[in-house]
Structures are given as structure tokens and as C-alpha cells.
Length: 125
Image (cartoon, rainbow, N blue to C red; front, side, top):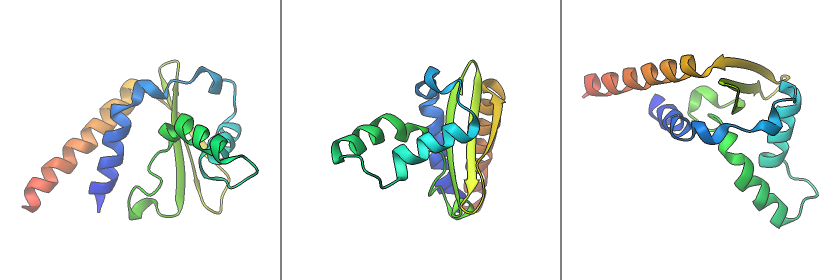
């Protein structure tokens, strides 16, 4: 079950530097969540060309949405600024929550988790 989550996290690790977006720095967690949610997931009055453009620009900020059963009721996004990883998430029936984590701590934690997944996969045969 966690192999899907691991795959999503490996993808995030491979694109961390691309998650730096200065225009997000002054937005509150709720504002940034709304911007990304609208750009990626909302069906609104944008033209098909605008939807495609927004998807191309913003989908890299998606985090663990459809990332395994553990995240079925959640939608989350990730961005970076000033050495901090910003994680925004919501359970579908709640308001967005945001946290900022030091980049080095995020990398160390995700790397350790991915290493644990590999060990467990070997142990499972």
C-alpha cells in the first residue's frame, strides 16, 4: 500500500528545486491552498487553453493527492521558499492546514522513510 506513497515522495524529491516560487511567499496558507486548488482541480470559467496552462504551471505543487489509500480523503500541496518546505493539506470536509518545515529536515525525513520502505520491501520478499 505504501509503495504508491513512496513513488509520489520520490517524485517530490526529484523536483524539490522546481518548487521554489517567490510569488507564493506573501500568501497565507489558505490563500496559497485556494490558488493551487483552483488552478489544478476546479472546473470554472477558464478556457481549455487556460486550464492546460495552469495545469502545466501548477501541477508540480501537488502532493500525495491520490497517493495511496492513506490519503484518500485528503488533498495536499507543497512549495518552497527561503529554505523552507511549505506543506498545505485538507481533509475534504475541513479548512486547509499549513506547516513550514526546514528543507534539510524534510529531505532527511523523506529519505529515511523511503529507505525504510525499501528495507521493508526486501523483508517482505
